[in-house]
Length: 427
Image 1: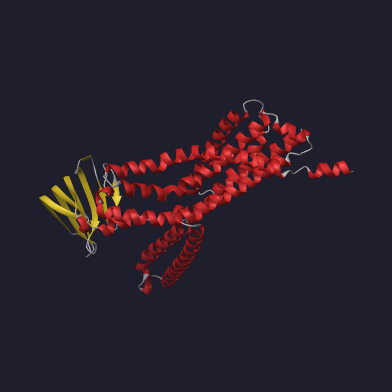
Image 2: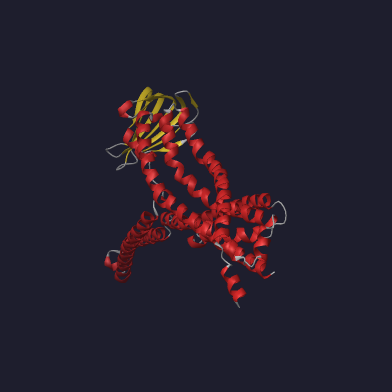
């Protein structure tokens, strides 16, 4: 009985726990650098290269990169946890260290406990990075980007692109130096006049505090009043100067997406948006009821009532209200925020869900466990990322439930890991 009690106490050894945890931390650090480099090149250096081409000072570019790092860390940590755990357990298995632990009276818990601890820690750090550091970095990024745009507004115009500002849409063709070919501008003036402006070419100039200056060559201008759209004016000129203010450029460039907001802000937006949609839907339903009552009174009055001709207008009004209600009910903006809210929790918790799968697969390694673990980890990471992308696409375009769109990869990883763990332990 004393021997059994001693063995039960030895099922969890602080020394072995620290040893396995240190091995996992080392593998995690190596894999984190690997994934950090991949996401860094994909998301940061491309942006930095674009800014450098516009001769933005190197110090400001370095700050932009620094403020964008939370996004890279947020995506790198869960995948590094998966691959790092696979490499560690695979090496311990192929070197027969786990076999020695089992022969010494320890159970498989001695492997799962440090892995679970590692997964929970990385999940919490990843969530903190995304929910606290990313919004803070976005605020600083936008503040610096405003300063850069004010000093270099030409950043916002590129070849073969469409740029939307406050009341202006600029469509550009090819760009050679500061000259833009085949320029199209759609805008609206302060007095409500809509204009269509085309030019064979335009020279881009920095207007300083005024904004962006476009000197149009061979320009054609057509203007239409919103009140009387059938009346329009047009003009042809060899030269025309067009301005885009700094305020419009900044407003278009520094908009914050739900991915750059905290989970609390996203939940607040969803709550307010739902209330707003509910109020609008109730208002439309009341209008529809009034239209239906008007139509009913018209039909009851008959031709003698003198209002028979209003039947068509009542039917048309009811149709418009029904279409408006359908548009409100199928609002996609709120779906984007709901999917992003689930994503903010699903991706960080992926580090925890990966633990069971990584340990179970690592225990099956025979030879070269570290190399095999790295390869399998990369394959699983690519599959997981693909499932997230497909889930997000299905949720936005096909109307799939947002919860399953984001959480299905985690659920499958956790279920597969637990199943393999039970199968491995019972062998």
